[in-house]
Amino acid sequence: MIRSLWTGVNGVVGHQTYLDVIGNNVANVNTVGFRKSSPVFSDLLSDLMRGATGPQGNLGGVSPMQVGLGSIVTAIDVSQAAGTLSLTDSPTDIAISGSGFFVVRNEQGQFYTRAGNFVADGEGYLVQSGTGNYLMGTRIGDGSVPGTPGGLEPVKIPVPSETGDSEYTLPPKATGGILYACNLDAGMALGDSHATETTVYDNLGNVHQIRVTWSKATEIAPDGTETWKLNRWTWKAELLDEDPPVEVGSGEIGFSGASDPATGVVAGDIIRDGSEIVAINVPYSPVPDPNNPGQTVTPEAGEITLDFGGGGDPLAGITQFGSSSTTRSVKQDGYPMGYRQGVVVTADGVLNVVYSNNMVKPTYRIPLAFFRNPMGLKSEGDVLFSVTANSGDLNLLFPGAENTGKLMGGALEGSNGDLADSFSDLIISQRSFQANARVITTSDAFLKESISMKK
Image (tube, rainbow, N blue to C red):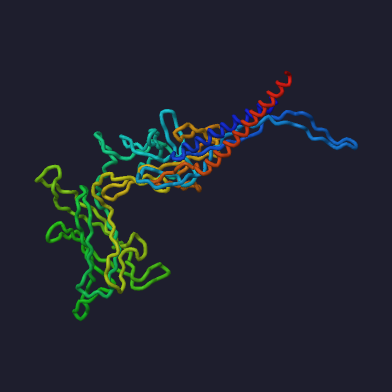
């Protein structure tokens, strides 16, 4: 009877722990990145009342006779299943779609979390909302995105400050190259032309217009008439700052009249003899000085490369076919000054700063932490985990590498707990607790009855 009393006590204690775990899961059903837990029960040692005997002669074997001493919670497992993703209106909220953990740091050290509710603090550092834990990333210094994580530092977005943040303002870039993609009508009449105007920028970020005009090249025939120099065109570049425009370059280009599979020549494509790429010098006109009202300042002369060859790709630049003259696209590499307008996080973990001049600059790449046994991590509160002897070593990878998870900017991962499951577990734990409590009261009744036998 004493034994059954203690068995009931062990069951009550174990199911009280079960209830504690369920209560924690329910309480954190709205906690960002929360990982639900579940207890693991095991039976205690059993009293051996009679040992086992093997078969002997005409007598068969007898199994041992044992009475168990109840149950005990031997482990509380943390589920690392993914939670539900939901979109937010904050671009610095980041969710992990797949496996992995964010790396964060505070004064106590480095930790790992699935909670991506990051905000910018007063200095522009991305920190977890409410805790101030810094999000760690690899800085992109020269514009080339790193392939492997290294040199982790707190992720920072540019903010205006008294000392000046060099990345909050993007300086202007003078146009250094223009790539043309056009078609010149092979049937165009002599004297007609096709022109394209392009916006370019000087070193101060001021806007200028350059017009390139193409016309059929001509020659004098033996009979004295002007005829087309077959498959040849002249071009002229003009700066439109002044009236009349200032010519800044001219030349002649040619096109293939027939295809040659052996050499890769395509009929109608521009002949690549060096004339398809030409450098011009552009003397920009004075512009108003923003720092001195009423004064002007003269920008540096522009050195611009005109590329009529499409960057070397067949038929990607200027072509000559028997269809209307058109300009498919014109790309130039300059831009005016811009201010930081927002940030965007890509699926592969690159944090891009978006500027008011529509330029995008990669500044950090956010790695993910991986462990052989993520269930072996230790919960530290604030949805943080730390490494233990059973979690395995830390392995840092960028999102999308080696089948790892990917990032989703402007989204958050909710708790992976489910209220319906928790309520079902709650009913089971309640009934189990009641049953074990009934074992205690029944054992107590037996003891009372035994004591009364003495009277």
